Length: 97
Image 1 (spheres, rainbow, N blue to C red):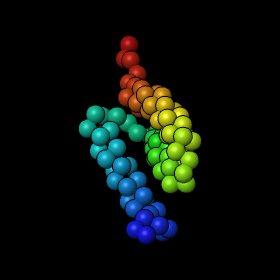
Image 2 (image 1 turned 120 degrees about the horizontal axis):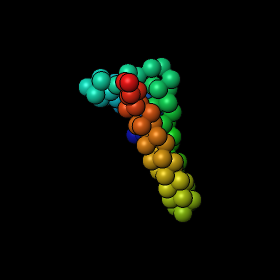
Image 3 (image 1 turned 90 degrees about the horizontal axis):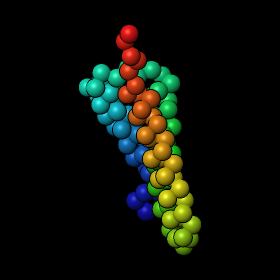
Image 4 (image 1 turned 30 degrees about the vertical axis):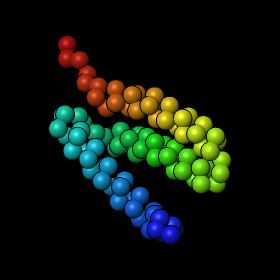
């Protein structure tokens, strides 16, 4: 099969590196200061976001479509809430008095 074992995870690693590089460019263009812990939070958000898709695909492949849909929707809702919070945290600029 095309996406089995090590090759699949190799492609997922490449995707993660491309997303991280794009996030860095996106943050630099907006003048955001990305510290190590903000980068770690962004990586954790991406992991939750992508794992909801992986779990959905696995459960659909196993014949558990309703469970896959529920996991996908829970993961998507969680990713949306955490993504909005992460965006507000990263884009926050302290007020100058």
